[in-house]
Length: 226
Ligand SMILES: [Fe+2]
Image (cartoon, rainbow, N blue to C red; front, side, top):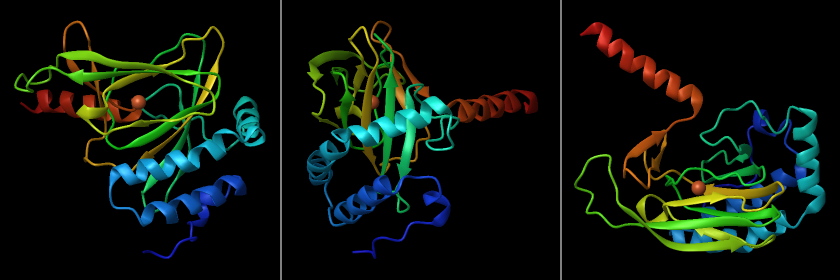
């Protein structure tokens, strides 16, 4: 087990101490675990405490509304709704908050890691899909819906990495909701997640906007150099 408790100073400057304290505790707990199932089980025990902390959630929302330096709303992640709250210095996990306006959903997608997610305000819809194809057709998948649930405020659900965890999340309500999620260490070196078109079957990478600009620039350069 590594020594716990040391966080690089540059990461702690603007992070509320109560979030740092929780995350340092989670890091020590996760560091002892070797299976994704036990990591998910651990976070399903721990995350509800944060989700239920109305003062903490309200404080984060106040900061976002005010454009405060924490959390950094200018960091461009893959999902529009997503804001990063904390990254474990040893990359064991990250803590993220998601702001969903009424009736907003993300595309059908996979993840590069395990996750535990749940709504802190309102109810979150999670739709799971299974792959029905044999993977032989490049960048195509045939998906079938295999589960749909409403995760109630305060509850959590797990996300599996890659194909077993293909899903779509969003807000079925006519008012905004707030979701929190913890995602584990990346299992691949992908700098994107896959998104799936249910009609055409096409699989497309979803990059964070700055990464996409670099990827496309590289593609253009390859044409120029040919
Ligand atoms: Fe997701």
